[in-house]
Amino acid sequence: MKRNEFLKSLGFGTIALVAGEGLLSCGMNMDAAVAPNVTDGEFINALEIPETINGTTPLVAQSIQDELLTGKKVMVQGYHNGILGPTFRVQKGSNINIAFQNKMSEHSNVHWHGLVVPAEMDGHPEQMVMPNESFNIQFPINQQAGTSWYHPHIHKTTAKQVAQGLAGLFIVESPEEKALNLPSGSYEIPLIIQDKRLTTDGSIKYNPTMMEVMSGYMGETILVNGTYKPFLNVATRFYRFRVLNGSSARIYNLALSNGADFYVIGSDGGILPQPEKVKNLMVSSGERADILIDFSTLKVGEQVYLINETFSTMGTSQGTQSYKIIDFIVKNQESDTFKMPSSLIPVPKIAGSSKTRKFTITMDMMAMSGGMHKINGKVYDSNRVDETVSFGATETWEFDNSTGDEAHPMHIHGVQFQVVSRIGGRNTIFPQEKGWKDTVLVAPSEKVQVIMKFEQKGKFVFHCHNLEHGDDGMMLNFEVK
Ligand SMILES: [Cu+2]
Image (cartoon, rainbow, N blue to C red; front, side, top):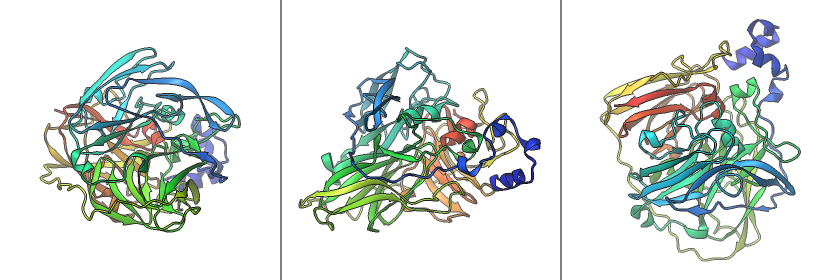
């Protein structure tokens, strides 16, 4: 049953017949429970920039104090000195050796989202690091330059731990990328965009109702790099922004408040073949976008906001409101040495698919006890291997959301894939999908095909990166052998 039909059925008084405990506890104020409005206000806090570390720096998951709202110190979770974690910056071809320590009172682990690493290092939900335990993370970087990220991946508590602050960026660099002379140093800025629901004392509240498990949990406060109402002083030149949508469920349709064009130069797992000029860019949970913004057309003293523009393609709970995300204030006049290259880094097309697997992604309203969100009719079972893939095989996987009315960003571990086709719904492959991907947004009515080569042996998961959907069971195991 679709969500809309389900809500209609509630109106006919069938609640007692279809409801489980979860539904009754969420009350009858259904729409109020979904998609709280984002509040606007003055952008007066300087954007915090996470510290940059190398591939051998220890990482500690901990409960720690931070101040999300001015003057309100609260406990959050993070990997460093507050919410979120440092940004790893490593070279292609290097070896990673990270001593990970869990200093929290609950078990956790680290998934390297976007990095193609051995299965035993991937942060599979079974790989738990218990409180006060350590785990040595080692893997080689054998992939192209790109913007990956890291976060916990414990089944049923991934969303909560990410919401409480456990996430960080992992940047891979390469000589090919360096040769492009993209804006770097203080002109290369990470933007980790997350929505939070904050209590009046300024702490992060994570307690989704059943309705919010259906839609995804959305907060009314947008943080960028953990900063509330952030601004960034910029000069009259090009900047590179590494955007991560680190939200549980909220999808952003990024645009500039002056309607100016900007350029997508990279997707989840690498640089695009050429810059793509856009006015809007849809980024769903887990996805990254490497973008260039040209502030040279503005004068000192002017400002422009990165905003979310409304959209109507992702179901009724998403995109209902336009709001500001960050304020760019032009502070300095500077001459720009950067010239936009006409081509970037080639992305050789993956071909020779030996098999097509089809995955129907559905929400089953009647299955409240065992998880409503399913892939091919199944909810996640850690003891079950759902798909077996031959090592070295190239395959096409199709995610079919043609009967659904919620959006599902589907993420596959252990690979970087390419988007082959999108049939139904938005019916197109978007600029940010013309390169290496690990997460693809499958909107209502859409069937999306991706192609990839499996080059890591072992057991991995693939799942919806709407983290409430994933925790609810929209995740399966596959084994490469
Ligand atoms: Cu989903």
